Length: 349
Ligand SMILES: [Cu+2]
Image (cartoon, rainbow, N blue to C red; front, side):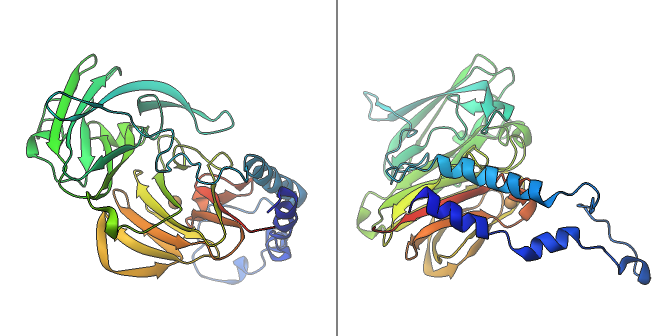
């Protein structure tokens, strides 16, 4: 799939119907006694320039397509074995030790959109923590921020003392302090770690990350060409997937015929019905738990705190948009933005 070919297709994507709608005169409004409904997008008929709308749409897609490298198969922020997997050391007493530092940074969601962020190790989302059932783990969490914090292991079965809710199970980690959380890993699945102190602000401003636990016996796991994570977030840093907003979100690049696994997690404050164009998805796990009967979807509605594992057979070549279907989170007069990415399915030449 060459870029030129895609751009040709993209140019046809804007149908004449939508342009007509933008310039049509509303004529029924005065003829009805129905109370007026407030329109969040009032028609600014004098100001609308459809060519400018088209130009902005194309510019966003061009920016996105320019970063697609057909060789980047398997490369993705959240890919298994990726560059953002958190390294650990083994302690003498048999613990996997993860040293994580909370720090404030200026986080760029792409193209110079900079937000003040709270982060684990300076990145949003924090590094991917990968564990195996039966591991004994120790998280040494150091707070270099200007306010207290705490770490919660969302969805995991842990001893009460390390549940990470300040004053319920532990004191806050004050600025300059380090707190250690120790537990044994009981269950496999897709989990998250995040702040549970001033969480409505700290978590959505970046103190969030994925935590993946694999079973000790991998024989029951789906065989996939790629295992990816998509962390959704919506408030403190705008509408983001893995900390970035379209057109700076990462594509997933794969080959026609590949089977991939995608673990979608919502760390935001809003629901997000994520819709993948053109290719059916099998939902295999909810909140880390394997479903007795996986089911097919094209849109999966993800509430805050939820995780869904999807297995997707890439049966159709091309560039397939994948976006939140609350459209204000994904598309506007300026074109695609926010919670949008693309699966690039390479076909043989
Ligand atoms: Cu959304």
